[in-house]
Image (cartoon, rainbow over all chains, first blue to last red; front, side, top):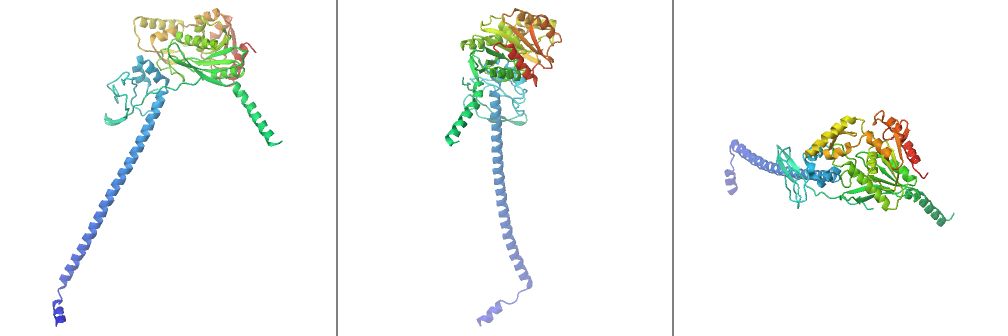
Length: 171
Length: 287
């Protein structure tokens, strides 16, 4: 009989076989689960890293915008300062003014390490080669772009602005 | 009352309320000096029958200095044409008081030339009677102008808190400093010098520029006042601590018309502002 031969084929096996089978199945299931968890963790890590990068970039953009705004305000203060305009008109004693007045008079923010004035050809009115940060001796008068420079163990952000004349008062 | 009449009355009331402000309307005028520097002055047009008054600020100040602004406003309200220039002190469009530690390259002659410039400006506008009013060191700049062929249109000078130049350093000390500066100029030394000068503890100037101000002494102030071609009235504060103890006596003993306002400081601040205004108005003709 076919049925009896089948039963004969499914004859009881030792319990150890079943235990091993169960263990194998459990290991496979656990392995699959571990693979899922590992995959999800890696994906999560990547998402967190991306989010951190996005936030950092956003923060950096905000800081740069704030720094630019502060630099623009400082430039405006400088342009409206009688003494700065005096130096552009008559730079004979510019060295004294730059070293003793420009940052000490309370007109410009304390966060500035250096300030310098340039003539229309982009030449520093009296370039110096020592100090906390060295302003360039010459700048291109077109495309006055800010740049970051690592010097003396920390970074300095350099800003350049065109010095505009005060508008005439209508009489 | 019907609606059109109410509106008409309201409009009329608005016009009447705004009239005094139109009468006292001031404006800042700008002009170019022969040197190319641009200078400005606060100008108030006044009644045609009254003289024009030029009010000059003190050392390193501007026309916005409170004592000057208050005097200018009182004169404008009284109907005078008032001009309050701001001396350039070598800086185009200077609009703030200049710090003692700034680079001072201006000279007394430059200041006097600017006073002359604004007097000419008033004359060109048709003013034939001009009164000069100075505060503090501004009086010395006016005196310097008066000693260099002043315009015939200038009819009187009123000096408020006439500066005593020898309050910190006496005449021999000033003479020594002047001689030192003269020597430096003669040697061609142009490096900046830092001295105790005027109200400044650290006044920074070139030797030649500083020397120009050291030509002023008590003696030549008194002599210039005595030689003045026009009447000079002096108004002093009774508690002015920027004067030598005997400065007032010296002025009085030389026979100058000095009015002392008891209790007032060099700046006639607080309640003395009104006493000063009254004294200035009393010193002027046309009232």
